[in-house]
Length: 130
Image (cartoon, rainbow, N blue to C red; front, side, top):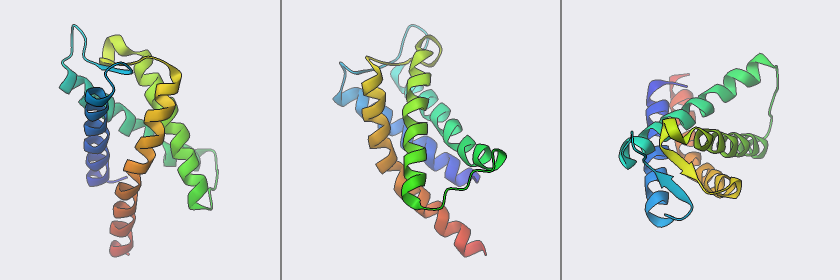
């Protein structure tokens, strides 16, 4: 994952967390006594981007080959859900909290559809370089 892709994911994830905080204030909490809502969304977006960046590394490490795009979407869906849940479990540090695991499922599912165009754009960049 190159720097432009990482930055694109970070921005996408952070903006999504902030918009979700505005639309669903009963389900998602941003900010605490240490972090403002904007900083909490940026930190949560960055941590989720780190989780996503680890996926290809872990797949190579464990020699797992995912052949179809649908299976890759399912893998990233799982990473998004688990990543959001883990980030929310450390709400004292991250400033991002959720009301239940099902909120992580909802946010992770929406996040996969938002991240799709970023993946497609990064795939085009790799194809142009070859």
